[in-house]
View 1 (tube, rainbow, N blue to C red):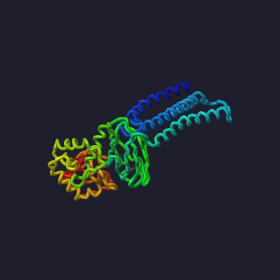
View 2: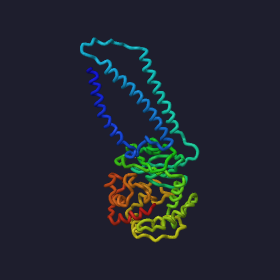
View 3: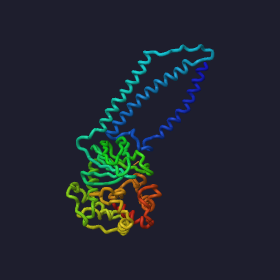
View 4: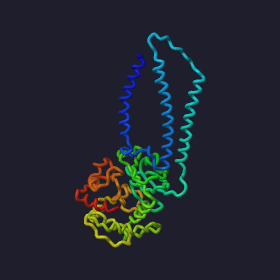
Length: 388
Ligand code: CUA
């Protein structure tokens, strides 16, 4: 009778806690935590998720069986006052063999797909593979597309349905490249190339993060993966190939082949002529377009970009971009979703705050405060915004 009363009390407590648990668990929705590996959208991501699911199912089964037997034994064989000494058992070969063999089999069931997964994800991808070079920097990411001679930073564009192979290293300390929806973490080292590949299955913009402590702003060393349809991706590459050196300075490189749709992009960039927006975009573009009227804020911003020394650390060309720059490439900074390596949304207001006082937004960032006034920041924002 006592036993039953206690069991009822225990059940009541569980009944009280369970809804709380459900509430807590429901707060962990993927919308609130987009940096999740539990909803993979690539072949690589699926391999990892399958291993995780397999392991979890075995663990859940073991947990339910063991805890179930334990709870049952606690209630069924509960001692009462005046009970005699229980029967003492010293070893039982049959039971010991059983509880050694069963876990060994379970571990084998987990180990086989795990080892297979390790080999699969470390194999060199075959077929139509897009090579992207990744360079980690304190605290931002450089992305190079060597086959099409294009460089960008912090937002890597990839085509859906094609395997991309990242060839990775670092300019300074050890970082770790982690695009959670697509693949696992992979460390990047100085003077050594590590690789990571995956084939994206779904278009969209997804967060990524440096996953190895690398200094004060490790937490703000994020990036974005922009997965696009093959057509959108090709259009983006073609557009980026127009962001070379200014026409009078240099001709487009001879190996640049995909400039067909570039002309159309330039025209589109000129048409809207929004105040403070596009005019500069045409300035850096191919020689086919007639020169657009220059916005005064853009022109002032361009002067400041040179005078304040920004140009010493940031390149504005995507084509033939110089290597070894300290700051991120800004060729298409105006079109990016975030600034400060995935830290702040790329609004004019945030960009202006950043230019005036980067140390206040990202303490320790290698960009110093350059004594830019609010008016000067306005011009610089107009100049940078035009670099799409
Ligand atoms: Cu780079 Cu942490």
